[in-house]
Image (cartoon, rainbow, N blue to C red; front, side, top):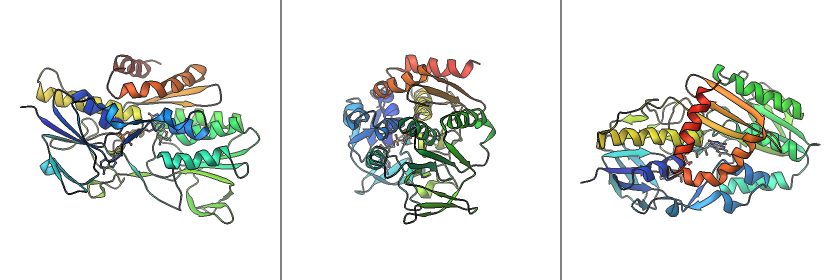
Length: 369
Ligand SMILES: Cc1cc2nc3c(=O)[nH]c(=O)nc-3n(C[C@H](O)[C@H](O)[C@H](O)COP(=O)(O)OP(=O)(O)OC[C@H]3O[C@@H](n4cnc5c(N)ncnc54)[C@H](O)[C@@H]3O)c2cc1C
């Protein structure tokens, strides 16, 4: 009889695991939404480069036919039983349980982030019909999705509206050493575009009447349009550590015996990116197959993540890092094309069909100078 796996969350990481294990295991995905959003494409959508059809697809067409898709929201995970209970009080147990539920925004200062299509609609409206030309972009302290996104939005806004005042708020005074090359390049691009950077600016108060933000150190800045991302936390706070995310072994992605946590939901010290979610999913698939089929060795996830971003109307950059090193390439037109192209390639990445291209490319970028 086939081993059973239950995957909670059919987003980026969950779909990859389900599709790569389909046919080999008895696979169930528990997911409340009908549509999968290509979240990096939200930037293109908010700026107005693409329409919404380009960045969403029905989840049932993205999963292989042998995957059982249960439309439900999980309300409780019982790691010691490798079990999940859904909001309609059904219990699902398995040999392997994967938590791939991403992260939910913490609602702070009445700020809406930009992780969902509805939030994307709101920012698209702000960007394309702005109330004034004073834009403040940034994030609150904590773990945010794709830390490059606020920079990317700032670069695109300034390219779209060269006469606008664009300010980026960075909560950290200094980036962690591993991110220094990335932060240095982004700061250089921002300065060359005339974007004001406020480093160490931690939002302490947002006054929507006077349109001002005051930092925890008393620094004030005004805005016409505010685009701020808020930190994420897991939907299962009873499993979370102080970061708000679920602890795992950072190399095996194991939370406990037979229970893996992948992608944005776990506390691995790597930026929350789709590339990290994908590569973590691949590690989990390999290691489950090593146990089930016994025909391969187990592998370790080493923190690899990659992100292409727009730096202007014509150019882009490529960021790569793992737990030990980082590098940033560009700006160049090549990385801009790469980013644009991936909007179409993303859907194929969910069933592993472009791994033959993706995995060697990521490892070559990591190996190169
Ligand atoms: C604006 C923006 C720009 C980005 N840019 C980039 C980029 O350029 N490059 C890059 O690599 N990454 C980027 N990212 C990050 C990337 O999209 C995420 O890191 C990635 O989607 C995480 O995958 P995941 O599978 O962990 O979570 P998700 O893809 O978010 O999937 C989580 C799934 O779990 C489901 N779920 C949630 N709660 C429950 C529950 N209780 N029960 C059942 N199901 C549940 C959700 O409905 C969802 O389908 C960006 C993100 C944003 C928001």
